Image (cartoon, rainbow, N blue to C red; front, side, top):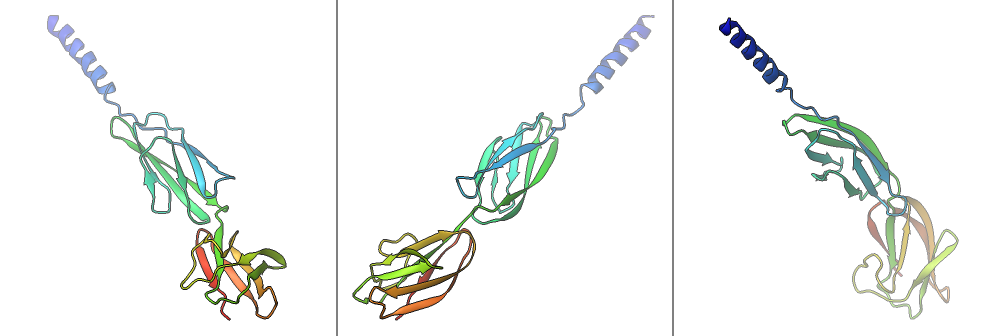
Length: 188
């Protein structure tokens, strides 16, 4: 009788032990907000339960191991974001969503390396955007003093420029690419 009770007790202990071995799989999820005021910036909120470690892949070659995180995209586009959660039992689960970025602007700087003896006025379409007041020996950088910097959404734009006296005139088209600063040298 004692051996049957001992056997029953061992069987119950074994069942409890086996049922206690069930590994936890994380219930993985996340939400995100694309910032309207900070171009390319996305705030990610982890909604996972049962996860201990996290690995974010933002779809642009960047990643993070934070539970909640932010990421700044440098170009417009659609990105597949994967967030992998791993439980304390070393079981993993992944959640994926598409993040669409369309608020990253591009930059173009107008400059000249010829001294005309007067400012050069620059127009995009028919809108005056500024005057070139410095004449550079080399190339220009975005937001450089004395040059004209245009920041806007990706696309092609018509421009015109002229010296104040109107003796030299330029007309053409330039392209703005999201997240990129380009330079346009006005040659005499």
